[in-house]
Length: 48
Ligand SMILES: [Zn+2]
Image (cartoon, rainbow, N blue to C red; front, side, top):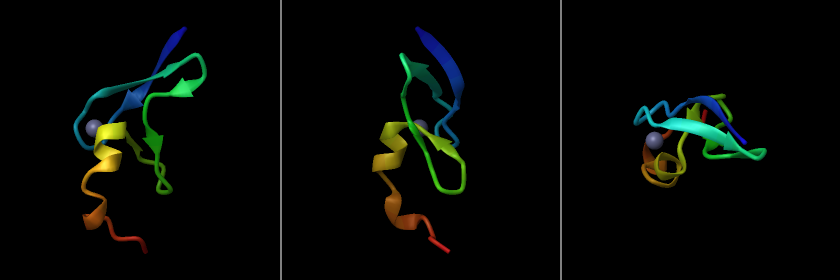
């Protein structure tokens, strides 16, 4: 079972929930990003 959750805020890739497993990451500011974008460019995010 696959359900569209939303799109990556950075690259626009569609993110699905597959059998309850999210194909991406919801960050603390509630933005949704794919695994690729979550793993790269962490350095420029300001944690305030
Ligand atoms: Zn992405």
